[in-house]
Length: 163
Image 1 (cartoon, rainbow, N blue to C red):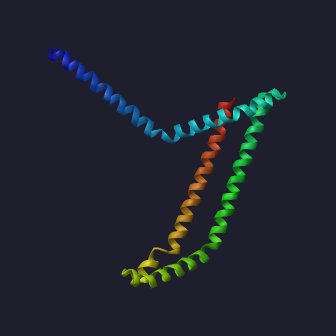
Image 2 (cartoon, rainbow, N blue to C red):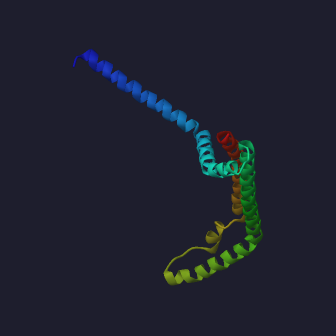
Image 3 (tube, rainbow, N blue to C red):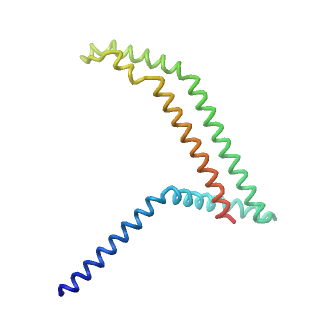
């Protein structure tokens, strides 16, 4: 192989690798959109037999899609309601859990000399700060609201795929 051919082959390999890097960077940058589209496609495929069932019963396709989407929204809303109720119950029970955890930590501290371990109760209780728990809850609720926005986008995309 001559030097010119070797340079040309090396340049082709380098160009292909650069193209691969650009494609992968694009996929990484569009990951949120791609995930939404693939999830919507999944739901459209999974719910299509239900739409087909309604069509076989004499409904027009747009009406069948509307019914399936409304049922899907009702189910998702019910799931969010259950999640919100569970979260409210958790927040209400938080003081009880904190007291129980404190009691167990103090009991554990009583056992520490027996196990030849030494740790102050202040250090053990430092990690159980109610502010940290509320920050976690706030972060969780922010994530849930973001998930709800994603679900709305998902439902709209499912309708697009189903039509």
